[in-house]
Amino acid sequence: MEYIKLHGTDLEIPRLSLGTWSFSGAKIWGANEEQDSIDTIHAAMDAGITLLDTAEKYGDGKSEEVLGKAVKGRRDKAIIATKVYTDCLHYDDVLAHCEASLKRMDTDYIDIYQIHWPSREIPHEETFRAFEKLIKDGKVRAIGVCNYGPGAMEEIKNYHVVTNQLPYSLIWRLVEKGIVQKSVENNIAVWAYCPLAQGLLTGKFRSIDDVPMGRRETRFYSGKWQQGRHNDTGFEKEIFTFLDVLADVCTQTGFTMPQLALAFLKKAEGVGSILMGARNLHQLEQNIAAFETDVPDDVVKQITDLSEGLKAAMGDNPDLWENKNGGRMF
Image (spheres, rainbow, N blue to C red):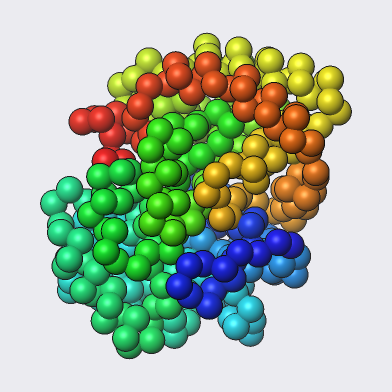
């Protein structure tokens, strides 16, 4: 496994990381046996995937609890990243929510404590004052953010932030419109989530009828399905047309869609780690195999060029979930 060192820290993170949202029992993923989740985390760590991401919001803390059980006895080998939610960013709230996360995970410290979404109401000065106390007290090692656009990035430029977790894939490239560049300028590693676009880039879904209703939450899909938090028309036609073209590239080159999708992100500017979920050992093994596949540069350029039209058609709002007031990624 390849690793990178986060700027200004002694944290070395793997370029492939494990997301644990699917272990929370959230409706978008469905129920998961706890032992299956723990076994998957153990196997990931054994494969060198030591960066493990969770959030207090995932299953109201269920994901954190499962992760805590999984790393018991091997905590020193794990890099745990969790998140505090947007409406909990006042000074006292940050301290209290951090304590709650520590308790759920049965650990003394969090390696990377992240802001889940930027707030337009709570000033960063107050939030980072709490972060500084947590670092001083040894409860947090480093600070990360998630879903931060250029405006929010500008507001934190004088604070030490190590990661910006962003929705980024061959299908969803809107973060390239200024956000990735701003992260790179500030020595902040891009942490790409939804790299397979919640299954669209696995090759399993070739039309909207193939997509489970519970998965139709994002702005990939029309708001008419009433699963999500937006009223967009979605990009179903454009996405499935692109997937047909990508399938042809797979046939021509012999690579699978996941192999191509991950190769794109491995070559993308600023991407420090690619965050992938895995509900079981089989999915984890598939993810690792796809990640470790070498795809020639000319093929990566081909698929990048082919997705330019899709990127242009999707506009400028990089928020994968909401469109109100231009989305939350300001």
